[in-house]
Length: 574
Image 1 (cartoon, rainbow, N blue to C red):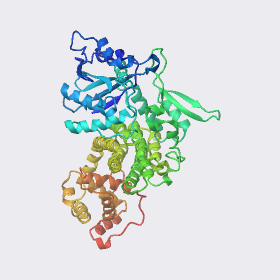
Image 2: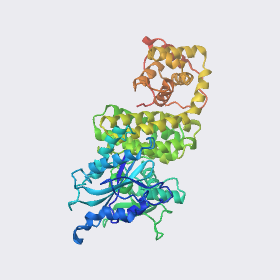
Image 3: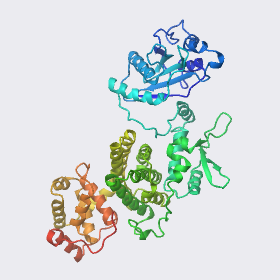
Image 4: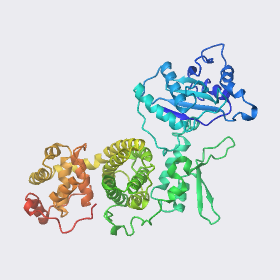
């Protein structure tokens, strides 16, 4: 149940013409009154003898009892109350009760006998509109301060009373909702989404990994937006506005939106707060940085960097007591998702775009983000943008699967972090994003896992038995589940490659398993595959190397725990 307090107006009759009209696209069906302040108000919808002028005159009577200079100019209060899409269709009597509860809770008609005059009109199955005159019967103005928050609180009680969909409590950090006029305009122009939503997504993508104001503004222009800036006498940019080239007003002028009106964290000062570290472009000195390897193509290397940074962020959310650092990791995760959606292969793009769109709500709360703690994730987002798009096959495809596997855990960790702090909307948004990330992972991982499973089936039976023994030794409670999964073949191939690369498979598997619980994973073997490949820096494609004498020795050591020892050197891991 979502109540929305609209901007106050000056014409009661004008609003009634809209409520009882056909709607912009003939969407108003059977407009009629369901409730009013005295239960006796005329209904122009179903009473042939009643007119909209009659109802407007009745509602405005207290206004006309005041002297002209005492009448408030913006005297029309308007609130719409909308049910959730999965709620049952409510009867008129139920909507009438809801209307009375809303006007009482907001102070419009608190039940003291001298409240404002109001009426509730229904012209669709799923919502009503409440119109009121902001002058009480005693001539005073109503106490409707913070009426939006009061209406939201009452809506939560209404949901419980009628067993309706429970809307998560908000905290005032959500982006401004798209208006019905903006939605209708998008429909009329054949756009997939309203201008406000398109601009918000484009600005967020431009922000992902940006290192300076100039770079951010250039990205906006490169994305095809019209950009205007406000510049101080010092030459510093104070603010910006953006517009879609095709979004124009009646005078054929572009309609500009300030960043702060698109979302609270898209104001220029909030964006500039992220620019706290100089970034090194991928491919220069990156081989000297942990988690970066020149052995892979740029898109693949960027995804491996992202997987390392994402896992480090999971650990921060799980264990850090610094809320500012955790909030920064979550906000930077939003940048990573925006960058990944922008550079993803076609078959994963839709789910990743939805994941980024949902997680956008999870990236904001009243906890101040200290972005100096999240520069690895911001650098990863930058690398994704500048490394170019992945084509979904080969190492790039496996890199996408690897990073998505980690991002699912990161989204779940973000949901848990928000839930602990009672950020209900953010926690729910993070959970929805995790669902889309899971779907994208299934799409990205299908081909790499097929290759790995086939590779695992070609391993000599004696080596497969050795790797099975490793699994039973390290994971005694989960081993039989793992060995029965379709992904066991891919895990066997990964353990074989790790062994051939000089790692002790038993030590590596134990470390991978200890990083986070496995019991709730959809496929334990798949999770372990990507953890091991990330930790050991293993490619997913290309022929597996022939076993060497050293690798055979490591296999024998893995079956004899008293001989197991960490390798002399291994790829940096996090």
